[in-house]
Image (cartoon, rainbow, N blue to C red; front, side, top):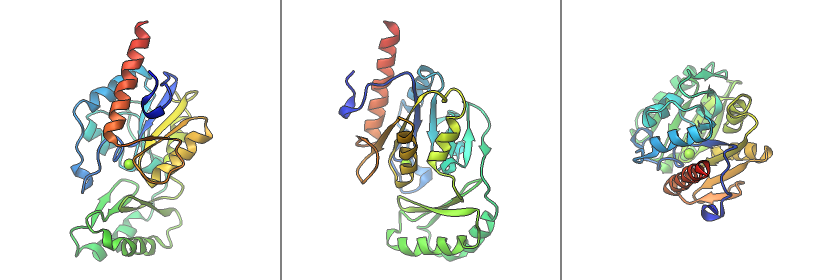
Length: 251
Ligand SMILES: [Mg+2]
């Protein structure tokens, strides 16, 4: 296998970190409307075994949310690194301080209540304000969130595709992967991260600082060295990878 789109030949010594929305599944108008492609869960399960468990989801969502879509409790970092699960099926631990979050939500909620296109996605240690259905309100939404978070020293804003997130300060996908890499089965492996959004750049930075591989899905500027065009292309590459591991193990 020469690698799809010039991607390197896979190694069973990789720790594979996968974003969810826009990477494994196509983005949807609302977060709960994403559709999981047929065969994805089985493929991830198989790859996880082939990598001795070193396959994790690194997402802005709560991990339990992704568990529900995949019907699989993969290890991972949720809420942009604020949540951690080291092994398949383990409980999720919140790692960061989200005090004051309820006050920020209470301040913001009445200000957006009049527009049903604005969606507040609540999580255990963060929340996301989605304005995908009202893109013309972007600047206003960013300003509202900035004002609401003011005075809460332990919280900060993060901007993504048609969304603004309020989350514990310092939590990002890079710190999430760093925490996963502290213990087996991830430690001592080469980190490989696939993501599609601005928020994934922290993850790309982390893997590049650890002699790993950064793969960006879709267009847009990125520090990643490699590209896959779409979630469908990611699926195809992961299928090829799994088949390659299988062929190698038979030899
Ligand atoms: Mg994404």
